[in-house]
Image 1 (cartoon, rainbow, N blue to C red):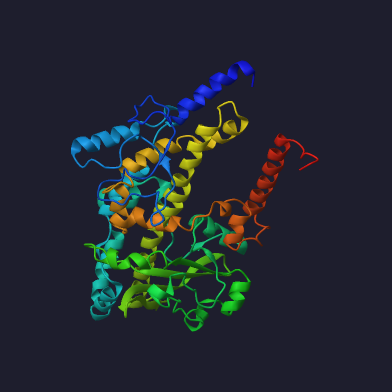
Image 2: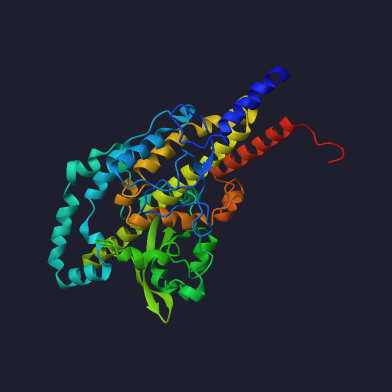
Length: 451
């Protein structure tokens, strides 16, 4: 950069850092400072700045740590939320805001009761199944799923989804749908272990046995299915169990900690073969688990019990996807990098130009999300069964987030996909990483003789 322009660059960066401006800020201010999540509502835990509830930093609005509870205060909150840097604002997609309330109103009341109670009812009164058949044909309020755009109607098939004929590609496809989540990994042990502290929770090893799933493995043993990359687990046990007592004490809410085993069949279908539903059991100062395992059935009452078990898994999976895979891992963790880039790198810096397209609109979406989606009483609390504990639970999950595990190939190794180099997406991703690494190395020039 020409020497004559450097003072202007330094002044610009000083204005963007805003270290001498305490706020509150106006819409025209361009200040990038770090702050905690103190704008979710008075009744919600402040996230970030503590070991108990860590969270990625958000961009500061200049407001104090107390949250106004009045209507006027709420309007001030919205105005502060809109004081997003002008260069970041483009627009907010409206599908979630429009559809979430509709999905919430369409929720089936049977999912808010313990499964054993439903099981006893169905076994005692099989004629009740007629109501389920009628409900399955009902379009729901305002047209239900048919009122949504086509992409939003592409949900999981109740009996497994047929995938491309190449078995590894099918497994990868399922992994893509689950995104980068802690529970998605290949089965390494006959029974899934738990990472919960034994001194508080006792033994939470899974109760699923090989005898229960053996008939669904197409003649393979569990070890053979694992070795051939055909047995997978969707584990929503450990992150749910510590909160289940509080969650199930909420009105009209009943949840399970779940573990689901999925088998890649010879016809290219990835289908569930066992579901473990667990509830907390207080014994001698320990929060142990009372678990029941359900396996597939296609006829009679048992078939509907299997459908209900899958519904409880979907409830956990939806909440985890929205709170962790989507909001936390995709949106929230990016905001500190956007702040750091604008605080430390001039717009004339080549790395700033490289990163800017990837940041576009993220700050605006995150700000609107704190106002409408993840705030107290917001759309997320209305549509996920974690309710008022939703964001707090995502904070606990964030404790295990590791920056070094987000890039290739470490991300693949963490999810046991290191051997999947024959997959197109894996191969292209690793090739792109190698190319970018070499290109960035060429920008810095050859290493010095002393280094």
